[in-house]
Image 1 (cartoon, rainbow, N blue to C red):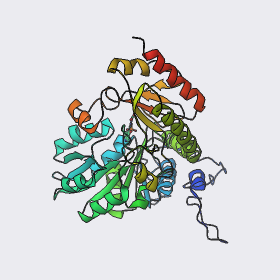
Image 2 (tube, protein in one colour; image 1 turned 60 degrees about the vertical axis):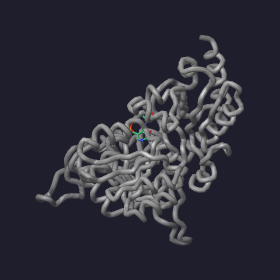
Image 3 (tube, rainbow, N blue to C red; image 1 turned 90 degrees about the horizontal axis):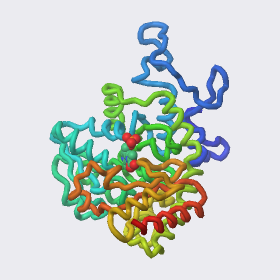
Image 4 (cartoon, rainbow, N blue to C red; image 1 turned 30 degrees about the vertical axis):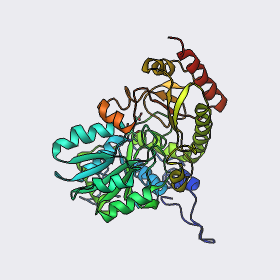
Length: 396
Ligand code: P1T
């Protein structure tokens, strides 16, 4: 079944967990295999020129990729899905629908690689990028220029977990004739569905929660906007940053357990955030699930859980923070996020190293900030690991 049908007796629409397991997939007609085959083929035999079974060349259309595209579209409530070779390739495809002179209004807390692609690559082609605190609606409104075609936001943002009001941003963008694009990587559709809040497109690094097991790099664009879909599809086929069949299979397998994993990520992260907040060596905790977080109420109104990402600051200097990060055992020191295993990182020197220091500091990304991707291990082990590393870091 490529689309999970509603129940004919009750006309119930399938729930999110059912879609996660089934949407976009049907048993293989030749064998009955329940898992979507990894079609290792670049081309397809045609019976007559341009007469074929819907597949002609694998850059253009591919059956394993198509299953994933339909699955992700169903999860985000989108009419269309397009998959890419990385999250950066997905973001790039959206920007590549623009033209020289067009402007993009971006959140001032974005993944460092996104900032780098926008300011160091696409700016050379005449597109303009400006950065504003998306939680300050008056500042956002003031930052529009007549050329603004897109508003680009991460919520929760990477790495400061800032929350933007998606309903308000969509209204504002539309009133100005722009489209709202949401990078939903940190929340995943299990916790937040931006299209239902008025956004025009969602982008993902499927490398993270959607894949969920730190074994694949991928990206996706999901939209119900027909023109944007056509334009992104044109870019996908023309520029060719498509994922391989095995990568599509891995993400497709990952999404089957997405709601289960996210439940545990959220529970563990809430416990870790609460523990850090009460810790005498911790000076600041960024987690939208904490009532002290400035975006908590908005997050409650647009998310069904607060996610698995936390960032925090320790007392003392940068060297102390680096000692702490390097002293963990259950948390591995690594880039990336969203896998079942817990990771710890130092955004200023790792994931956000491409952002000039003054820009980072303006947005609140201080040198000593520590970021956690809280995994699905036992809560007590995670807390004990952080506590032990904090104690170890006291000794130079
Ligand atoms: O790594 P890639 O699949 O290309 O995804 C890029 C990307 C896009 N958007 C967000 C919000 C991201 O966090 C990322 C990748 N981020 C990391 C690798 C990281 O550790 O933050």
